[in-house]
Image (cartoon, rainbow, N blue to C red; front, side):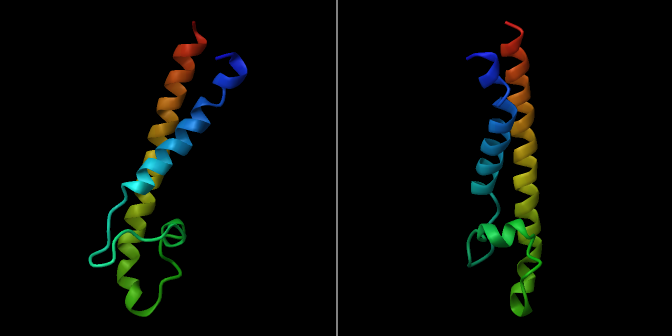
Length: 85
């Protein structure tokens, strides 16, 4: 890989980490995993009975953010080690 391609590793790590975390997000009882739109808004658009799903949507959002951060850190570490060679 040349230097131009290496600079995209942190971004790629962020996308991969966020995607993996989205796939591994917690499930709502008897419903399963919430759709991306609900997770991305942290359940703010849920109304009436669905409001009890807000904590699960918030937890799912937190999983995605944590996965993205971990992916970015891994991508940066790979970038730094490969760019020093």
